[in-house]
Image 1 (cartoon, helix red, strand yellow):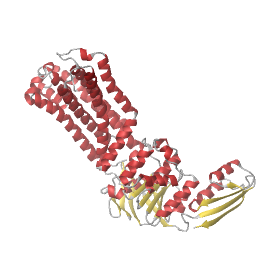
Image 2 (cartoon, chains in turn orange, blue):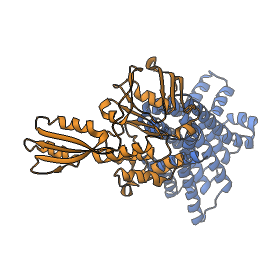
Image 3 (cartoon, each protein chain N blue to C red):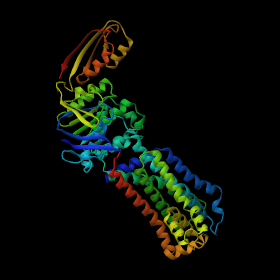
Image 4 (tube, rainbow over the protein chains, first blue to last red):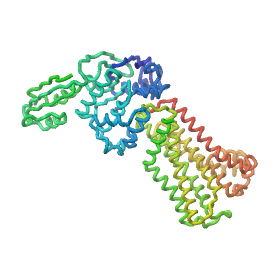
Length: 285
Length: 275
């Protein structure tokens, strides 16, 4: 599906990518990890045909640079930093839908599914939306078309737990028909979403590993947490995960999306001294 | 073609929302309003009165303002978008590079030419209401001249914005281009000719290569066909081109510069890194 063949890129004589060889098949969900400057963004830009480079990059045998329109028509991209677009939301949707040959309504429906009420913001400048709203809109644009490759740079970073749950569901719907490339600084942010991990360091692939694919993208965990005493900060954090207080802030119950379990545990680890009992049970698949 | 028009529409809508466009429109509309207000249609120069006089003054003022406006706003837009990271996202969408680049040019051209043209149309409408005779030939040729000079500086602006990697560099380079052309209007040419450092033909040749001077001379030629105000230079110009020939040259040459610059910019744009 995607093939990087000896891809190298230098900026002012400094090598950023150094002879990358990668083959990514259909249905693979690949985490691209590495520290700042490892070459993740550069690799993605080469994949999108935005950078010139040595070596070849092909998607289904075609070059994203030479066959831009055809290749990019099959790629949905969510950048790490939302672009500072001054155009209104309605125009952005219209522009993207027009280029991708899809109905704007499909993108709007997805945005609504992610919890973004698009009606009131259609005339608002994209740059004036909150971080979460921008992220939801970019995800809706990327997924609201016939994309066979999804390239996402920290896609869930600005989403609330409910939106993340729906986002995982949307990814699950594409799991069989699309190849996903998810970039992140940290593996724990994306580990539950992927079945392969590629780590870059100094422009080279230093790790290429399959990971256990047992976490269902649509699975849910029923959680129960008991704490020794009421702690406002913990109560606020659990409230943001839509947990219910079963009594005086000492017992909490709620559900966590399967791929979000590590993130949830990361949050609870900050209050580990307060927790007297915790349980997580898979409820559906 | 659909991609090109989508890109052009994007640029037009974004420009219409920008503050520079408001100022740009107010400047050109304001010039016409002020010229009427101060009774320029009643005054006389070289025997010209009425709307001709106003158009002559308007075109001279436009020559000073339009190029720098077009250069600065164009290079800011393109280099600014690249610097802000807009290209990374928008160029990840399935739009051809040709459609993107030329779509931006088409959109920007419409945006920069319309206010200037609207101001001229406004002047004509006011003249019709006031029962002032409208010199339609002059109006048509001046409109074409403005279209040519707008195309020229838009092409140069796109070339500069493709070459520059930051907004600051792009603005500096655009200002330098404008200043160079401005200096070669009179100051440097007069200086070297007085000092006798170059042959008069060379100086006239340089002037004819300067799109600003070409525009200026063509504007003069319309109410001074013998180019008396230019002195001996007029003989070189009229002997080389003839009066009609020069009018055609004044339209074709700046348009060609704009087209060649834009095409060069396009090839550089598609050859290098996009964001």
